Picture (cartoon, one colour):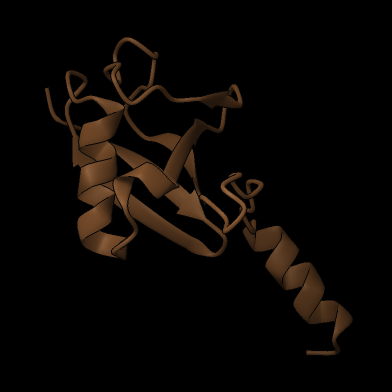
Length: 101
């Protein structure tokens, strides 16, 4: 059964077509072709729960459903992962309005 997930990072959203039997590693490999970021330097976090998704488990195992929002973070130089940073449309418009636009 085909499904898709929304992978968000900063102001960017990637729509990834997948299957519930795909592993998180499979999703990271798909993202690698889009963003040229090594798989080992990617972390996916289910936005609804804040749970870090395990590479070896399937989407179904981790209860990732169709149209789920997943946050993408990258490994920093110090080997830690960066914090989740997803800019919501409201944040963008509020910042723009504060600047007088």
